[in-house]
Image (cartoon, rainbow, N blue to C red; front, side, top):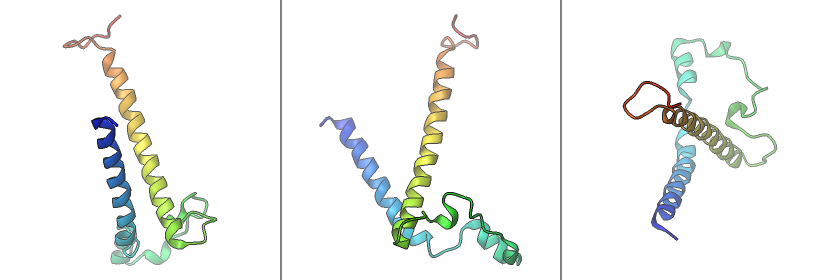
Length: 107
């Protein structure tokens, strides 16, 4: 296995480990919006977003609450990563249309 591939696997393994560890840290604390609503005294007015695919950071159909939350967190992280990766690719492709040092597209 070449060096860049090993590095990518190591980064991936560390990322997964951090996501799993973050589950135990984050699941006991309210998120920023919930805490702000509680601090300002209007948390009782909140409505559930049950139509959301990951409502309450849970995946329907999994019997274990821990597995459900971890799966939701990893799924959300993958969606965010995919969105940023796609945006980066699109912007890089757009930038490559321009001649180096020029603001004009290459014909």
